[in-house]
Length: 138
Image 1 (cartoon, rainbow, N blue to C red):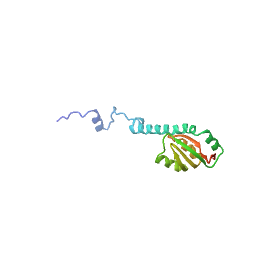
Image 2 (image 1 turned 180 degrees about the horizontal axis):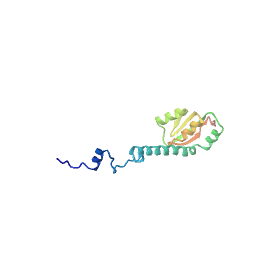
Image 3 (image 1 turned 60 degrees about the vertical axis):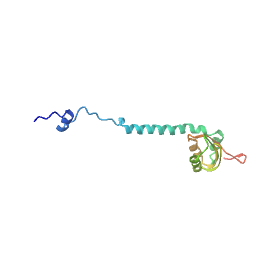
């Protein structure tokens, strides 16, 4: 009894020969690789935005105080909106929170490195030197 032909791909597999019409997918055509590239690009843009715009959020008074190389400074952070529990947690991790008035929060004993780290947050509008007892104290 005669059998119908199986087709070029199946017959090649039975005889041990590879099919010539099979194309290997390149690594950059894979969906998961493209997804990871997009995620990496978004994260890079997010952090780059903070590094580029962060120094502009520090006022000249605070920058002058930071140039004197203090161990800690007292600052007032103005956010784009009133702080919520998450923002207060960030503030308390960086210094001693001394109160909040509207969207401005006062922090004491903040290190210069933490001032710069805080200025890179997208929700921070301005970081200024806090006035303590009518006098500016770094």
